[in-house]
Amino acid sequence: MSEFNTSDFMNPMMTQTWSNGRHEVRCVKVIAETHDVTTFTFGMNQPVLFFFKPGQFVTLELEIDGERVMRSYTISSSPSIPYSFSITVKRVAGGKVSNWLHDNLKSGDQVAVHGPVGQFNCMDFPSEKILLLSGGVGITPVMSMARWWFDTDSEVDIVFAHSARSPRDIIYSRELEYMSSRIDNFQMHLICESTGIGQAWNGYRGYLNYHMLSLIAPDFMTREVFCCGPEPYMKAVKLMLQGVGFDMDRYHEESFGETPVKDVELAEKHADAAEVENLQPKEMVQVSFTDAGQSVAVALGTNLNEAANEAGVNISKACGVGICGACRVKVISGDFEMAQNGGISEEEIEQGYVLSCCTNVIGDIEIDY
Ligand SMILES: Cc1cc2nc3c(=O)[nH]c(=O)nc-3n(C[C@H](O)[C@H](O)[C@H](O)COP(=O)(O)OP(=O)(O)OC[C@H]3O[C@@H](n4cnc5c(N)ncnc54)[C@H](O)[C@@H]3O)c2cc1C
Image 1 (cartoon, rainbow, N blue to C red):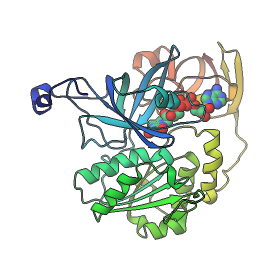
Image 2 (image 1 turned 45 degrees about the horizontal axis):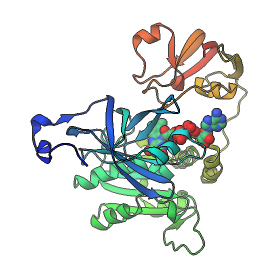
Image 3 (image 1 turned 45 degrees about the vertical axis):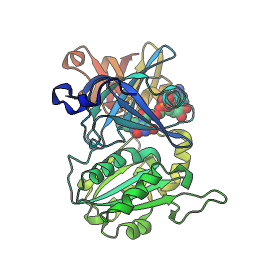
Image 4 (image 1 turned 90 degrees about the horizontal axis):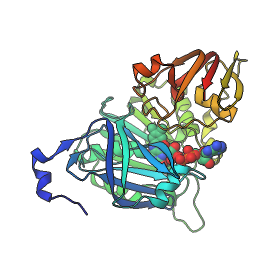
């Protein structure tokens, strides 16, 4: 229940607007979307307008078993409903935060979030014709966009193709059906990898491919594309579009980071169209983690987090795009390139710190970690 008067909402003097930063928010709703996906809605104790660009994300800062952990989650709601915002989380097998949220976070709980941030959003790439492509929980950013266009009575022509493992895995299925039944400029297409015994299904089956896409959106070459899903899914989509000469300046994608092994196995089936990468022998460099006493040889240009993974060193990470600062480490010596997005200060950089998620090694390097 809200702790403030409804009239406070109507009083501009009482209403604040959030901006990028750290915020203490309160969970106000928990909604089971599917058997392994839950939406958590957050608000504040005073009226706050949560403006953001549809597609952007927040980073949750939590304390689990005495350890501070950070994970990023896309805002799945739309800024057209601005007094709260939601995230939609899928359980990841063996995952620390996703399972903790499902098992513990309840209405009334307070959590800290950083954000909103993110370049993958529909406001910075306006277009009259859109193609939204998503796989699994990758639906969250494009759902926020779809909700925004729907709620604002936009005339944007939207084709939305979502891939799920089976009908029971389709997130927001009833809302998608509702939206597409209400307006002509919203065409929804669902693709299921398989159907369970006795499950009725009259949508597409299998994996998104060129033939299917041509049926779903015959004019896809003229649309702005927003894509989010497992890495192999996005890779297949990208290769497919590149293969037909699509203008890739009009292709935008969001990565949720490394795909858990189980998901890779399943999602790789999407990658029929994908070709084997050009496997040239690469120059190798040595990455050493002095505290951990580990060292690994990796190809020149390897991301520092990947090098740490290979060396069996676990660096905390969250957003994966140099925004949240969770993966900061200190370089003792060596060569690197960092492409951060504001998650580290000039002072920290001068002191030798880097954000490992967005740092590539370009020479032998020693890390104090
Ligand atoms: C910009 C952005 C937006 C995102 N939006 C969403 C969203 O809307 N919804 C959503 O559900 N997710 C989203 N994610 C993903 C999310 O941030 C988390 O990565 C996800 O929830 C998994 O976190 P976890 O803590 O549960 O798993 P983790 O604990 O990080 O584990 C991930 C996997 O790695 C395995 N693993 C962990 N440690 C080890 C180890 N030492 N050795 C071997 N294997 C290990 C685990 O078993 C698991 O399979 C987003 C990510 C980003 C970067």
